[in-house]
Amino acid sequence: MTEAFVAALSAIVGDDHCLTDPSLRASYETDWTRRFRGDALAVVRPGSADEVARILLACVDAGIGVVPQGGNTGLVGGSVPRGGEVVLSLLRLNEIGEVERGAGEVTVGAGATLAAVQGAARGAGWEVGVDLGARDSATIGGMVATNAGGVNVVRHGSMRSRLLGFEAVRVDGTIIQRLPGMPKDNTGYDLGGLLAGSEGTLAIITRVRLRLVPRLRNRAVCVIGFADAASAVAAASELRRRLASVLALELFTDAGLDLIMRHASLAAPFVVRPPVYLLIEVASSDVDPTDTLFAALGTLAVDESLVAVATDSGGRHRLWELRERHTEVMNAEGVPHKLDVSVPLARYAELVERVPVAVAAVDSDARTIVYGHVGDGNLHVNVLGPASEDEAVDDAVLELVLELGGSVSAEHGIGVAKVAWLVRDRGVETVAAMRAIKAAWDPTGILNPGVVFER
Ligand code: FAD
Ligand code: MLT
Ligand code: ZN
Image (tube, rainbow, N blue to C red; front, side, top):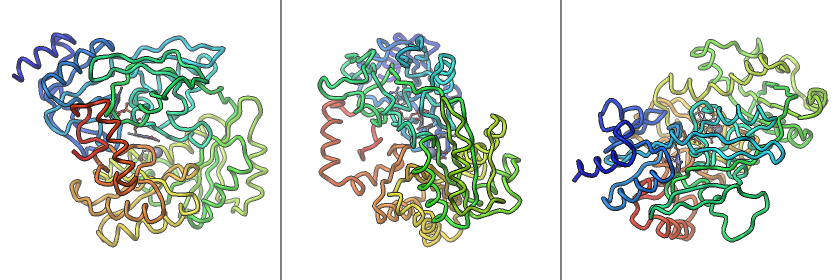
């Protein structure tokens, strides 16, 4: 049966795009963190929505699960097989349409990388409006499927806010489309909004219409040191209130900076090493935002020796590296337990202070390193030390987050990593409503089994 099934897949995509050899499958079977992996029955790489439809019909017929995959940069294990599924790689659907300069819109294939779309948008005087460190590999389809956030949510919102239209393939082989999409469009249910954040469990996204934002050419980046998380959060709130030009508000700690300096050979921003750092980027399309940044900084009681500002692109990049390279250096230290959570801003500093204590209570040898998008109340908790399958530290962190009134997934999704926490976070009734949608869209449960919901 398996041989006939794989032959049917090969007939749809061509032999070159149906991979069964273990060495060719390998990079599709392990996630970015190396914490999650599984064997695929095959990896198929369709070249059109029509081929996607035929693959789905074959998988429903055979009762074989399908794991959609874009750039495989997801951090919750949702893009790699659990064992025995077909990996559906969307990377060949990477066409980028012409940017409509007047409207600031573009239609792109689900497999186009964020960096490629950013390049096309900038060339036409626009920006995607969502940015994240995995930009060279993360795909637009994967970003919609996870409702990716990133560093500019404080200004432009998450991926769902940028979604104007979509094309998607359902398990019954139908292709649904709302392209080009309109900024005002209340005709019936917002199915694109539903697919955003569905993590490959409802349909396969094949094309996306994006609503771009004006290009912000005037920029300044500033890193400020603080004695504790509470003063950094208070300063972040004040800067956000005073400056309409805020594009990013990020937090990291000296423990993370230490790893960055060691693994990435970067220099600290100041001679003195404070425990907590705030990074702010301000940006404007028409005026230089630096003066208003300085004026706002003047109202904060910050120590001038703990302030670094850059307005040129090289200097800005160097300051950004101190925050952006955290993900990479966590991986260089080991296989991290990554917990992406959010809490109301009023509880953020408390979370930063209490999370290492909660981890130490269940594993005194574990190292906890936090960083995140403080402007969105989003903290990334990385725990190094415990074995991948030991979930005691994950549970301790998520328990604390719920106690503080937060969410167990801020921007990375549930994946397989947090399925056990969905009901704890959302409640039985809400999860039943979610399951009703899943049952209507994927009655046989072949789309990303084990992701979002417990099987
Ligand atoms: P994948 O990892 O391939 O897939 C992610 C999920 O989407 C899976 O469940 C998959 O099944 C599903 N999926 C993929 N494509 C489709 C499709 N076409 N149709 C239906 N389902 C699909 N995330 C943030 O939100 N903010 C950040 O700041 C951020 N920074 C990162 C930095 C680094 C260095 C790394 C490695 C990751 C970061 N991420 C961040 C996580 C990741 O980049 C995002 O989740 C991204 O949206 C995943 O895109 P992808 O194409 O790699 O998707
Ligand atoms: C980030 O903000 O750096 C990303 O979401 C990735 C991570 O959590 O490491
Ligand atoms: Zn993030």
